[in-house]
Length: 579
Image: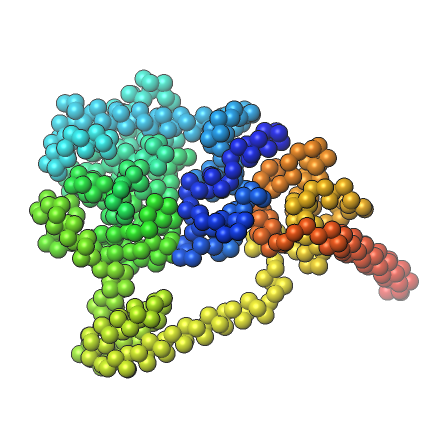
Protein backbone atom coordinates (compact mmCIF):
# COMPACT_ATOMS: atom_id res chain seq x y z
CA UNK A 1 0.00 0.00 0.00
CA UNK A 2 1.06 3.61 -0.55
CA UNK A 3 1.51 5.93 2.42
CA UNK A 4 1.37 9.74 2.22
CA UNK A 5 4.78 11.18 1.21
CA UNK A 6 4.85 13.58 4.15
CA UNK A 7 4.23 10.69 6.57
CA UNK A 8 7.07 8.64 5.03
CA UNK A 9 9.43 11.63 5.26
CA UNK A 10 8.73 11.98 8.97
CA UNK A 11 8.92 8.19 9.54
CA UNK A 12 12.41 7.98 7.98
CA UNK A 13 13.58 11.10 9.81
CA UNK A 14 12.46 9.75 13.18
CA UNK A 15 14.02 6.32 12.60
CA UNK A 16 17.71 6.99 11.82
CA UNK A 17 18.93 3.93 9.96
CA UNK A 18 22.09 3.60 12.05
CA UNK A 19 19.98 3.39 15.23
CA UNK A 20 17.54 0.83 13.83
CA UNK A 21 20.24 -1.36 12.27
CA UNK A 22 22.35 -0.96 15.41
CA UNK A 23 19.69 -2.85 17.38
CA UNK A 24 20.52 -5.96 15.33
CA UNK A 25 24.11 -5.47 14.12
CA UNK A 26 27.22 -4.38 16.01
CA UNK A 27 28.43 -1.42 13.92
CA UNK A 28 31.80 0.30 13.88
CA UNK A 29 32.42 3.66 12.23
CA UNK A 30 34.85 3.93 9.34
CA UNK A 31 34.82 7.40 7.82
CA UNK A 32 31.31 8.56 6.99
CA UNK A 33 29.86 5.03 7.07
CA UNK A 34 29.43 2.27 9.64
CA UNK A 35 30.33 -1.38 9.06
CA UNK A 36 29.42 -4.71 10.64
CA UNK A 37 28.83 -8.38 9.91
CA UNK A 38 25.90 -8.86 7.54
CA UNK A 39 22.83 -10.23 9.35
CA UNK A 40 21.48 -11.73 6.12
CA UNK A 41 24.30 -14.10 5.19
CA UNK A 42 27.26 -15.73 6.87
CA UNK A 43 30.56 -13.86 6.80
CA UNK A 44 33.68 -13.42 8.90
CA UNK A 45 34.76 -9.98 7.66
CA UNK A 46 32.46 -6.98 7.85
CA UNK A 47 31.07 -6.18 4.40
CA UNK A 48 27.75 -4.75 5.62
CA UNK A 49 27.70 -0.97 5.28
CA UNK A 50 25.33 1.64 6.69
CA UNK A 51 25.40 5.18 5.27
CA UNK A 52 23.55 7.49 7.73
CA UNK A 53 23.79 10.49 5.41
CA UNK A 54 22.04 8.59 2.60
CA UNK A 55 19.69 6.62 4.86
CA UNK A 56 20.64 3.28 3.29
CA UNK A 57 22.39 0.00 4.05
CA UNK A 58 24.21 -2.28 1.60
CA UNK A 59 26.09 -5.57 1.81
CA UNK A 60 28.98 -5.95 -0.61
CA UNK A 61 28.81 -9.72 -0.07
CA UNK A 62 25.19 -10.73 -0.66
CA UNK A 63 24.19 -7.43 -2.37
CA UNK A 64 21.14 -6.85 -0.20
CA UNK A 65 20.39 -3.24 0.53
CA UNK A 66 17.79 -0.54 0.85
CA UNK A 67 16.22 1.89 3.25
CA UNK A 68 15.34 1.57 6.92
CA UNK A 69 11.95 0.15 5.85
CA UNK A 70 13.61 -2.49 3.67
CA UNK A 71 15.87 -3.43 6.56
CA UNK A 72 12.88 -4.03 8.85
CA UNK A 73 11.16 -6.08 6.14
CA UNK A 74 14.23 -8.29 5.69
CA UNK A 75 15.36 -8.65 9.32
CA UNK A 76 11.91 -9.34 10.78
CA UNK A 77 10.32 -11.04 7.76
CA UNK A 78 7.63 -8.35 7.51
CA UNK A 79 5.57 -7.06 4.60
CA UNK A 80 6.08 -3.43 3.55
CA UNK A 81 3.03 -2.13 5.49
CA UNK A 82 3.98 -4.13 8.59
CA UNK A 83 7.54 -2.78 8.49
CA UNK A 84 6.20 0.76 8.27
CA UNK A 85 3.88 0.05 11.19
CA UNK A 86 6.75 -1.36 13.28
CA UNK A 87 8.88 1.74 12.64
CA UNK A 88 5.94 4.03 13.36
CA UNK A 89 5.38 2.26 16.68
CA UNK A 90 9.08 2.68 17.49
CA UNK A 91 8.84 6.41 16.82
CA UNK A 92 5.46 6.88 18.54
CA UNK A 93 3.72 7.81 15.28
CA UNK A 94 0.17 7.02 14.18
CA UNK A 95 -0.08 5.17 10.86
CA UNK A 96 -2.57 6.31 8.22
CA UNK A 97 -3.95 2.88 7.32
CA UNK A 98 -6.29 1.78 4.56
CA UNK A 99 -8.87 -0.98 4.98
CA UNK A 100 -6.82 -3.66 3.18
CA UNK A 101 -3.85 -3.16 5.48
CA UNK A 102 -6.02 -2.99 8.59
CA UNK A 103 -7.68 -6.26 7.58
CA UNK A 104 -4.39 -8.14 7.10
CA UNK A 105 -2.79 -6.87 10.29
CA UNK A 106 -5.96 -7.53 12.28
CA UNK A 107 -5.84 -11.13 11.05
CA UNK A 108 -2.22 -11.43 12.24
CA UNK A 109 -3.06 -9.91 15.61
CA UNK A 110 -6.07 -12.22 15.97
CA UNK A 111 -3.88 -15.28 15.35
CA UNK A 112 -1.30 -14.11 17.91
CA UNK A 113 -4.08 -13.53 20.44
CA UNK A 114 -5.73 -16.87 19.63
CA UNK A 115 -2.43 -18.74 20.01
CA UNK A 116 -1.85 -17.04 23.35
CA UNK A 117 -5.33 -18.05 24.53
CA UNK A 118 -4.69 -21.62 23.36
CA UNK A 119 -1.43 -21.67 25.35
CA UNK A 120 -3.34 -20.53 28.45
CA UNK A 121 -5.96 -23.21 27.85
CA UNK A 122 -3.33 -25.97 27.55
CA UNK A 123 -1.49 -24.71 30.65
CA UNK A 124 -4.70 -24.69 32.70
CA UNK A 125 -5.55 -28.22 31.53
CA UNK A 126 -2.23 -29.49 32.90
CA UNK A 127 -3.52 -28.80 36.41
CA UNK A 128 -7.06 -30.12 35.80
CA UNK A 129 -8.23 -33.72 36.32
CA UNK A 130 -8.00 -34.22 32.53
CA UNK A 131 -4.30 -33.33 32.67
CA UNK A 132 -3.27 -35.57 35.56
CA UNK A 133 -1.38 -37.95 33.26
CA UNK A 134 0.46 -35.05 31.61
CA UNK A 135 1.42 -33.46 34.94
CA UNK A 136 2.68 -36.80 36.26
CA UNK A 137 4.79 -37.26 33.12
CA UNK A 138 6.24 -33.73 33.40
CA UNK A 139 7.14 -34.30 37.06
CA UNK A 140 8.68 -37.67 36.19
CA UNK A 141 10.88 -35.87 33.67
CA UNK A 142 12.04 -33.56 36.47
CA UNK A 143 10.16 -30.41 35.49
CA UNK A 144 9.54 -28.12 38.46
CA UNK A 145 6.45 -25.91 38.80
CA UNK A 146 8.69 -22.91 38.05
CA UNK A 147 9.90 -24.45 34.78
CA UNK A 148 6.37 -25.42 33.76
CA UNK A 149 5.31 -21.82 34.25
CA UNK A 150 8.44 -20.27 32.67
CA UNK A 151 8.01 -22.24 29.45
CA UNK A 152 4.20 -22.16 29.55
CA UNK A 153 4.05 -25.95 29.27
CA UNK A 154 0.56 -27.40 29.12
CA UNK A 155 -1.48 -30.45 28.22
CA UNK A 156 -3.88 -31.21 25.36
CA UNK A 157 -6.67 -33.46 26.75
CA UNK A 158 -7.60 -36.65 24.96
CA UNK A 159 -10.64 -34.93 23.48
CA UNK A 160 -11.78 -34.19 19.94
CA UNK A 161 -13.18 -30.73 20.61
CA UNK A 162 -11.94 -29.45 24.00
CA UNK A 163 -9.85 -26.66 22.50
CA UNK A 164 -12.36 -25.92 19.73
CA UNK A 165 -15.19 -25.35 22.23
CA UNK A 166 -13.00 -23.29 24.58
CA UNK A 167 -11.78 -20.97 21.80
CA UNK A 168 -15.23 -20.60 20.25
CA UNK A 169 -16.49 -19.53 23.67
CA UNK A 170 -13.91 -16.73 23.57
CA UNK A 171 -15.21 -15.51 20.21
CA UNK A 172 -12.79 -17.14 17.76
CA UNK A 173 -14.14 -18.63 14.54
CA UNK A 174 -13.53 -22.03 12.98
CA UNK A 175 -11.63 -20.32 10.15
CA UNK A 176 -9.32 -18.62 12.64
CA UNK A 177 -8.69 -21.95 14.37
CA UNK A 178 -7.74 -23.43 10.98
CA UNK A 179 -5.57 -20.41 10.11
CA UNK A 180 -3.67 -20.82 13.41
CA UNK A 181 -3.00 -24.53 12.72
CA UNK A 182 -4.81 -25.58 15.91
CA UNK A 183 -7.32 -27.91 14.30
CA UNK A 184 -7.59 -30.56 11.60
CA UNK A 185 -10.56 -31.05 9.28
CA UNK A 186 -12.34 -34.13 7.95
CA UNK A 187 -15.64 -34.34 6.13
CA UNK A 188 -16.24 -30.64 6.64
CA UNK A 189 -15.90 -30.92 10.44
CA UNK A 190 -12.99 -29.62 12.49
CA UNK A 191 -11.42 -31.27 15.52
CA UNK A 192 -8.48 -30.60 17.86
CA UNK A 193 -5.14 -31.17 16.12
CA UNK A 194 -3.35 -31.84 19.44
CA UNK A 195 -4.76 -34.57 21.68
CA UNK A 196 -3.28 -36.37 24.71
CA UNK A 197 0.06 -34.61 24.40
CA UNK A 198 2.30 -32.51 26.60
CA UNK A 199 2.25 -29.09 24.95
CA UNK A 200 5.18 -26.71 24.39
CA UNK A 201 4.29 -23.20 23.19
CA UNK A 202 6.66 -21.86 20.53
CA UNK A 203 7.35 -18.19 21.22
CA UNK A 204 9.18 -15.84 18.84
CA UNK A 205 11.87 -13.37 19.92
CA UNK A 206 9.26 -10.62 20.24
CA UNK A 207 7.24 -12.68 22.76
CA UNK A 208 4.37 -13.77 20.51
CA UNK A 209 3.04 -17.33 20.75
CA UNK A 210 3.26 -18.49 17.13
CA UNK A 211 2.78 -22.27 17.32
CA UNK A 212 3.03 -25.43 19.40
CA UNK A 213 4.91 -28.67 19.73
CA UNK A 214 3.07 -31.61 21.27
CA UNK A 215 4.91 -34.63 22.75
CA UNK A 216 3.40 -38.05 23.41
CA UNK A 217 3.94 -39.65 26.82
CA UNK A 218 4.52 -43.18 25.56
CA UNK A 219 6.19 -44.80 22.54
CA UNK A 220 3.47 -43.95 20.04
CA UNK A 221 4.25 -41.96 16.89
CA UNK A 222 4.78 -39.30 15.88
CA UNK A 223 6.79 -38.56 19.03
CA UNK A 224 6.45 -34.81 18.40
CA UNK A 225 3.67 -33.12 16.48
CA UNK A 226 4.31 -29.50 15.53
CA UNK A 227 2.05 -26.76 14.24
CA UNK A 228 1.88 -26.48 10.44
CA UNK A 229 3.19 -23.39 8.62
CA UNK A 230 0.80 -20.46 9.11
CA UNK A 231 0.69 -16.72 8.60
CA UNK A 232 2.53 -16.30 11.93
CA UNK A 233 4.61 -19.51 12.11
CA UNK A 234 7.61 -20.46 9.96
CA UNK A 235 9.71 -23.28 11.45
CA UNK A 236 12.72 -22.39 9.26
CA UNK A 237 12.98 -18.94 10.83
CA UNK A 238 12.31 -19.64 14.51
CA UNK A 239 14.01 -21.62 17.29
CA UNK A 240 12.46 -23.02 20.44
CA UNK A 241 13.38 -21.07 23.63
CA UNK A 242 15.35 -18.35 21.80
CA UNK A 243 13.01 -15.82 23.42
CA UNK A 244 14.60 -16.82 26.76
CA UNK A 245 18.13 -17.74 25.62
CA UNK A 246 18.71 -14.34 23.97
CA UNK A 247 18.71 -12.81 27.49
CA UNK A 248 21.43 -15.17 28.79
CA UNK A 249 24.62 -13.65 30.22
CA UNK A 250 26.70 -16.80 29.62
CA UNK A 251 28.15 -15.47 26.36
CA UNK A 252 27.26 -18.47 24.20
CA UNK A 253 24.27 -20.49 23.01
CA UNK A 254 23.79 -24.26 23.12
CA UNK A 255 22.03 -25.85 20.16
CA UNK A 256 20.27 -29.15 20.95
CA UNK A 257 17.88 -31.44 19.11
CA UNK A 258 14.77 -31.46 21.31
CA UNK A 259 12.58 -29.29 23.50
CA UNK A 260 13.20 -31.49 26.55
CA UNK A 261 16.98 -31.05 26.26
CA UNK A 262 16.64 -27.26 26.05
CA UNK A 263 14.34 -27.21 29.09
CA UNK A 264 16.58 -29.53 31.12
CA UNK A 265 19.61 -27.32 30.43
CA UNK A 266 17.65 -24.25 31.51
CA UNK A 267 16.60 -25.96 34.72
CA UNK A 268 20.22 -26.80 35.57
CA UNK A 269 21.37 -23.20 35.10
CA UNK A 270 22.27 -23.19 31.40
CA UNK A 271 19.71 -20.61 30.30
CA UNK A 272 21.14 -20.38 26.79
CA UNK A 273 19.83 -23.56 25.10
CA UNK A 274 17.70 -23.54 21.95
CA UNK A 275 16.28 -26.26 19.70
CA UNK A 276 15.09 -26.39 16.11
CA UNK A 277 11.40 -26.99 15.44
CA UNK A 278 11.16 -30.44 13.94
CA UNK A 279 13.49 -29.59 11.07
CA UNK A 280 17.21 -29.68 10.35
CA UNK A 281 19.19 -26.53 11.00
CA UNK A 282 18.68 -24.03 8.18
CA UNK A 283 20.73 -21.06 6.99
CA UNK A 284 17.95 -18.84 8.36
CA UNK A 285 18.46 -20.44 11.78
CA UNK A 286 22.22 -19.83 11.58
CA UNK A 287 21.75 -16.16 10.71
CA UNK A 288 19.18 -15.83 13.50
CA UNK A 289 21.66 -17.30 16.02
CA UNK A 290 24.41 -14.95 14.82
CA UNK A 291 22.34 -11.95 15.96
CA UNK A 292 22.66 -13.08 19.57
CA UNK A 293 26.01 -14.83 19.88
CA UNK A 294 29.42 -15.49 18.32
CA UNK A 295 29.82 -18.91 20.00
CA UNK A 296 27.58 -21.99 19.65
CA UNK A 297 27.97 -25.40 21.29
CA UNK A 298 26.48 -28.12 19.10
CA UNK A 299 25.03 -31.02 21.07
CA UNK A 300 23.27 -33.48 18.79
CA UNK A 301 22.61 -37.16 19.49
CA UNK A 302 25.54 -39.57 19.13
CA UNK A 303 23.66 -41.77 16.63
CA UNK A 304 24.32 -41.58 12.89
CA UNK A 305 21.43 -39.17 12.29
CA UNK A 306 22.77 -36.83 14.99
CA UNK A 307 26.30 -36.92 13.61
CA UNK A 308 25.04 -36.24 10.09
CA UNK A 309 23.05 -33.30 11.43
CA UNK A 310 26.20 -31.97 13.12
CA UNK A 311 28.18 -32.19 9.89
CA UNK A 312 25.44 -30.32 8.01
CA UNK A 313 25.16 -27.62 10.68
CA UNK A 314 28.87 -26.76 10.90
CA UNK A 315 29.28 -25.00 7.51
CA UNK A 316 26.01 -23.09 7.97
CA UNK A 317 27.05 -21.76 11.36
CA UNK A 318 30.54 -20.93 10.09
CA UNK A 319 29.12 -18.99 7.16
CA UNK A 320 27.13 -16.95 9.67
CA UNK A 321 30.40 -16.00 11.41
CA UNK A 322 29.81 -18.23 14.46
CA UNK A 323 32.58 -20.08 16.32
CA UNK A 324 31.61 -23.72 16.83
CA UNK A 325 32.35 -26.26 19.53
CA UNK A 326 31.06 -29.83 19.26
CA UNK A 327 30.17 -31.59 22.49
CA UNK A 328 29.86 -35.37 22.86
CA UNK A 329 27.70 -36.75 25.67
CA UNK A 330 29.35 -39.76 27.36
CA UNK A 331 27.37 -42.38 29.29
CA UNK A 332 24.02 -40.85 28.36
CA UNK A 333 21.86 -40.62 25.28
CA UNK A 334 21.22 -36.84 25.53
CA UNK A 335 21.88 -33.75 27.74
CA UNK A 336 18.66 -34.32 29.70
CA UNK A 337 19.77 -37.79 30.82
CA UNK A 338 23.37 -36.68 31.48
CA UNK A 339 22.30 -33.79 33.72
CA UNK A 340 20.02 -36.04 35.76
CA UNK A 341 22.82 -38.60 36.20
CA UNK A 342 25.84 -36.35 36.80
CA UNK A 343 24.64 -32.79 37.46
CA UNK A 344 25.53 -29.30 36.22
CA UNK A 345 29.22 -29.26 37.28
CA UNK A 346 30.07 -32.34 35.21
CA UNK A 347 28.21 -30.82 32.27
CA UNK A 348 30.24 -27.61 32.63
CA UNK A 349 33.40 -29.73 32.40
CA UNK A 350 32.05 -31.29 29.20
CA UNK A 351 31.64 -27.82 27.73
CA UNK A 352 35.22 -26.94 28.63
CA UNK A 353 36.52 -30.17 27.08
CA UNK A 354 34.43 -29.93 23.89
CA UNK A 355 36.20 -30.14 20.54
CA UNK A 356 36.27 -27.43 17.93
CA UNK A 357 34.82 -28.02 14.50
CA UNK A 358 38.19 -28.92 12.90
CA UNK A 359 38.81 -31.68 15.45
CA UNK A 360 35.29 -32.98 14.91
CA UNK A 361 35.66 -32.96 11.12
CA UNK A 362 39.08 -34.66 11.23
CA UNK A 363 37.63 -37.35 13.49
CA UNK A 364 34.72 -37.81 11.09
CA UNK A 365 37.15 -38.22 8.18
CA UNK A 366 39.21 -40.71 10.22
CA UNK A 367 36.15 -42.85 10.92
CA UNK A 368 35.72 -43.47 7.17
CA UNK A 369 39.10 -45.09 6.56
CA UNK A 370 41.08 -48.12 7.72
CA UNK A 371 44.57 -46.67 8.22
CA UNK A 372 46.11 -50.14 8.21
CA UNK A 373 45.38 -50.28 4.46
CA UNK A 374 47.79 -48.18 2.39
CA UNK A 375 45.21 -47.12 -0.23
CA UNK A 376 42.80 -45.91 2.45
CA UNK A 377 45.58 -44.20 4.39
CA UNK A 378 46.47 -42.17 1.26
CA UNK A 379 42.83 -41.10 0.77
CA UNK A 380 42.61 -40.19 4.49
CA UNK A 381 45.69 -37.95 4.26
CA UNK A 382 44.46 -36.29 1.05
CA UNK A 383 40.99 -35.55 2.45
CA UNK A 384 42.45 -34.18 5.68
CA UNK A 385 44.83 -31.98 3.65
CA UNK A 386 41.86 -30.51 1.75
CA UNK A 387 40.28 -29.54 5.07
CA UNK A 388 43.49 -28.21 6.66
CA UNK A 389 44.40 -26.03 3.66
CA UNK A 390 41.19 -24.00 4.23
CA UNK A 391 42.30 -22.87 7.72
CA UNK A 392 43.13 -19.17 8.00
CA UNK A 393 46.23 -19.52 10.22
CA UNK A 394 49.61 -21.10 9.48
CA UNK A 395 49.81 -22.14 13.14
CA UNK A 396 46.48 -23.98 12.89
CA UNK A 397 47.59 -25.65 9.67
CA UNK A 398 50.80 -26.85 11.30
CA UNK A 399 49.11 -28.12 14.47
CA UNK A 400 46.46 -30.13 12.64
CA UNK A 401 48.94 -31.35 10.03
CA UNK A 402 50.99 -32.77 12.90
CA UNK A 403 47.98 -34.62 14.30
CA UNK A 404 47.12 -36.17 10.94
CA UNK A 405 50.75 -37.11 10.29
CA UNK A 406 50.89 -38.82 13.67
CA UNK A 407 47.62 -40.70 13.08
CA UNK A 408 48.70 -41.83 9.60
CA UNK A 409 52.27 -42.58 10.76
CA UNK A 410 53.89 -40.42 8.06
CA UNK A 411 56.51 -37.69 8.38
CA UNK A 412 55.54 -34.08 9.05
CA UNK A 413 57.36 -33.06 5.85
CA UNK A 414 55.21 -35.41 3.78
CA UNK A 415 52.02 -34.03 5.37
CA UNK A 416 53.13 -30.45 4.76
CA UNK A 417 53.74 -31.23 1.09
CA UNK A 418 50.23 -32.67 0.81
CA UNK A 419 48.66 -29.61 2.50
CA UNK A 420 50.71 -27.23 0.29
CA UNK A 421 49.57 -29.12 -2.80
CA UNK A 422 45.92 -28.91 -1.70
CA UNK A 423 46.37 -25.20 -0.92
CA UNK A 424 47.88 -24.47 -4.37
CA UNK A 425 45.04 -26.37 -6.03
CA UNK A 426 42.48 -24.33 -4.08
CA UNK A 427 44.20 -21.02 -4.94
CA UNK A 428 44.32 -22.00 -8.63
CA UNK A 429 40.60 -22.80 -8.63
CA UNK A 430 39.76 -19.46 -7.00
CA UNK A 431 42.02 -17.62 -9.44
CA UNK A 432 40.28 -19.32 -12.35
CA UNK A 433 36.88 -18.27 -11.03
CA UNK A 434 38.08 -14.68 -10.62
CA UNK A 435 39.50 -14.63 -14.15
CA UNK A 436 36.12 -15.67 -15.52
CA UNK A 437 34.57 -12.71 -13.70
CA UNK A 438 37.29 -10.30 -14.87
CA UNK A 439 36.91 -11.42 -18.49
CA UNK A 440 33.21 -10.61 -18.45
CA UNK A 441 33.01 -6.98 -17.26
CA UNK A 442 29.76 -6.28 -19.08
CA UNK A 443 28.15 -9.26 -17.40
CA UNK A 444 29.49 -8.08 -14.03
CA UNK A 445 27.81 -4.70 -14.52
CA UNK A 446 24.42 -6.27 -15.21
CA UNK A 447 22.02 -6.13 -12.22
CA UNK A 448 22.02 -9.23 -10.02
CA UNK A 449 18.24 -9.40 -10.23
CA UNK A 450 17.34 -10.84 -13.62
CA UNK A 451 14.10 -8.88 -13.73
CA UNK A 452 16.20 -5.71 -14.19
CA UNK A 453 18.21 -5.68 -17.43
CA UNK A 454 20.52 -3.09 -19.00
CA UNK A 455 20.03 -3.33 -22.78
CA UNK A 456 22.05 -0.17 -23.48
CA UNK A 457 24.99 -0.32 -21.06
CA UNK A 458 26.40 3.10 -22.02
CA UNK A 459 23.10 4.85 -21.36
CA UNK A 460 22.43 2.80 -18.22
CA UNK A 461 25.76 3.80 -16.65
CA UNK A 462 24.97 7.46 -17.38
CA UNK A 463 21.46 7.06 -15.94
CA UNK A 464 22.95 5.61 -12.77
CA UNK A 465 25.27 8.61 -12.57
CA UNK A 466 22.37 11.04 -12.91
CA UNK A 467 20.39 9.41 -10.11
CA UNK A 468 23.38 9.34 -7.77
CA UNK A 469 24.19 12.99 -8.42
CA UNK A 470 20.63 14.23 -7.80
CA UNK A 471 20.39 12.13 -4.64
CA UNK A 472 23.48 13.97 -3.35
CA UNK A 473 22.32 17.39 -4.58
CA UNK A 474 18.61 17.64 -5.50
CA UNK A 475 19.13 21.23 -6.77
CA UNK A 476 20.71 19.71 -9.90
CA UNK A 477 17.16 18.85 -11.01
CA UNK A 478 16.63 22.53 -11.74
CA UNK A 479 19.00 22.21 -14.73
CA UNK A 480 17.90 19.05 -16.52
CA UNK A 481 17.44 20.63 -19.93
CA UNK A 482 15.56 18.25 -22.25
CA UNK A 483 16.02 15.23 -19.93
CA UNK A 484 12.77 13.56 -18.86
CA UNK A 485 12.00 10.22 -17.20
CA UNK A 486 11.07 8.93 -20.65
CA UNK A 487 14.65 9.57 -21.80
CA UNK A 488 15.91 6.69 -19.63
CA UNK A 489 16.60 3.32 -21.27
CA UNK A 490 16.15 1.38 -18.00
CA UNK A 491 12.47 1.46 -16.90
CA UNK A 492 13.35 1.14 -13.20
CA UNK A 493 15.82 4.05 -13.29
CA UNK A 494 13.32 6.18 -15.23
CA UNK A 495 10.58 5.37 -12.73
CA UNK A 496 12.82 6.29 -9.77
CA UNK A 497 13.92 9.50 -11.50
CA UNK A 498 10.27 10.47 -12.06
CA UNK A 499 9.49 10.01 -8.35
CA UNK A 500 12.55 11.98 -7.25
CA UNK A 501 11.73 14.79 -9.70
CA UNK A 502 8.13 14.93 -8.50
CA UNK A 503 9.21 15.05 -4.84
CA UNK A 504 11.72 17.82 -5.60
CA UNK A 505 9.04 19.92 -7.29
CA UNK A 506 6.77 19.45 -4.23
CA UNK A 507 9.53 20.44 -1.81
CA UNK A 508 9.66 16.95 -0.24
CA UNK A 509 12.68 14.86 0.77
CA UNK A 510 14.67 13.49 -2.18
CA UNK A 511 16.11 10.14 -1.06
CA UNK A 512 15.71 6.46 -1.79
CA UNK A 513 14.19 5.57 1.57
CA UNK A 514 10.88 7.33 0.89
CA UNK A 515 10.09 6.03 -2.60
CA UNK A 516 6.80 4.23 -3.35
CA UNK A 517 6.16 1.05 -5.30
CA UNK A 518 9.75 -0.22 -5.24
CA UNK A 519 10.27 -3.95 -4.61
CA UNK A 520 12.95 -5.13 -2.13
CA UNK A 521 14.96 -6.51 -5.08
CA UNK A 522 14.79 -3.18 -6.91
CA UNK A 523 15.75 -1.29 -3.75
CA UNK A 524 18.74 -3.60 -3.21
CA UNK A 525 19.89 -2.84 -6.76
CA UNK A 526 19.46 0.91 -6.29
CA UNK A 527 21.48 0.98 -3.06
CA UNK A 528 24.18 -1.02 -4.82
CA UNK A 529 24.22 1.62 -7.56
CA UNK A 530 24.56 4.35 -4.97
CA UNK A 531 27.49 2.55 -3.33
CA UNK A 532 29.21 2.05 -6.69
CA UNK A 533 29.01 5.73 -7.67
CA UNK A 534 30.84 7.35 -4.76
CA UNK A 535 32.42 10.77 -4.69
CA UNK A 536 31.39 14.44 -4.46
CA UNK A 537 28.88 16.23 -6.68
CA UNK A 538 30.38 17.07 -10.08
CA UNK A 539 28.25 19.33 -12.27
CA UNK A 540 30.35 18.68 -15.39
CA UNK A 541 29.99 14.93 -14.94
CA UNK A 542 26.26 15.43 -14.39
CA UNK A 543 25.93 17.36 -17.69
CA UNK A 544 28.00 14.69 -19.48
CA UNK A 545 25.66 11.98 -18.18
CA UNK A 546 22.60 13.89 -19.42
CA UNK A 547 24.25 14.38 -22.82
CA UNK A 548 25.02 10.66 -23.05
CA UNK A 549 21.45 9.63 -22.20
CA UNK A 550 19.93 12.06 -24.73
CA UNK A 551 22.45 11.08 -27.43
CA UNK A 552 21.85 7.35 -26.93
CA UNK A 553 18.09 7.88 -27.06
CA UNK A 554 18.39 9.96 -30.24
CA UNK A 555 20.61 7.34 -31.91
CA UNK A 556 18.12 4.66 -30.96
CA UNK A 557 15.32 6.73 -32.50
CA UNK A 558 17.35 7.23 -35.72
CA UNK A 559 18.16 3.53 -35.79
CA UNK A 560 14.46 2.73 -35.38
CA UNK A 561 13.57 5.12 -38.24
CA UNK A 562 16.21 3.48 -40.47
CA UNK A 563 14.89 0.03 -39.61
CA UNK A 564 11.36 1.20 -40.42
CA UNK A 565 12.49 2.69 -43.74
CA UNK A 566 14.33 -0.51 -44.67
CA UNK A 567 11.23 -2.56 -43.86
CA UNK A 568 9.06 -0.26 -45.98
CA UNK A 569 11.46 -0.63 -48.95
CA UNK A 570 11.42 -4.43 -48.61
CA UNK A 571 7.64 -4.39 -48.67
CA UNK A 572 7.65 -2.24 -51.80
CA UNK A 573 10.08 -4.65 -53.47
CA UNK A 574 7.98 -7.64 -52.55
CA UNK A 575 4.90 -6.03 -54.10
CA UNK A 576 6.75 -5.65 -57.40
CA UNK A 577 7.93 -9.28 -57.44
CA UNK A 578 5.94 -11.70 -59.58
CA UNK A 579 5.08 -15.04 -58.02
